[in-house]
Image 1 (tube, helix red, strand yellow):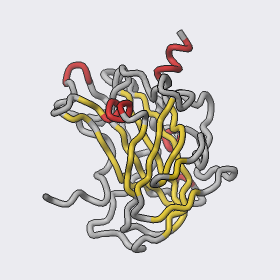
Image 2 (cartoon, one colour):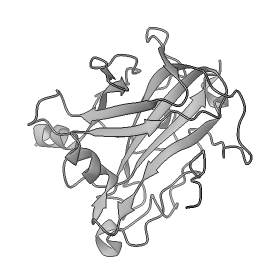
Image 3 (cartoon, one colour):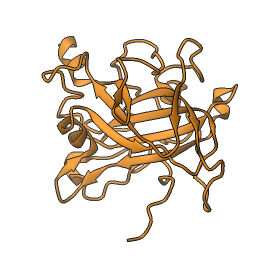
Length: 233
């Protein structure tokens, strides 16, 4: 039974910048406890990066240019075709945040740069889309931010038990980045900044949610709006 549960869970396995793929765990902060276990108490420090750190002193920073495509890859244990990122039952949204490094991790101001929930046309959640892409999700590092050292926070949210309070399962991880080449200013309006812990509440509609009853049709992704905002078409 324990092995089955572990196979259901997930971790941030590696990252890539453009066509350069980095090894397992490079630039990714280590987690506290079992590396595949979710965070159920999203009012605890572990909701930040699945550890109690702000910055991991032993984890180097990956130098990236603002405006580049950055890829994150979730897996169970390895990069084989048989080892997929998460159980098909653990369906839900994906979110990616940036937060500029501060001495006190409670002072980090996080803003969301990516989200994907449920697509009514394809009947797929972000977890399904990522599974179809061998665990990979791509995001562009925003150009209109400030240069500096950042934590890129990935968040996969499994909703299979979210119909009860505290039943939602979060799988956060953090990558340490040194971002250069930005415009060194935010757009107007600027990002909506949040704190971790603090950004999520137990009664948020995207966290306390009956996926089987609603089938994704009225789902609201938790957290702030994505920055930069999508331009009207």
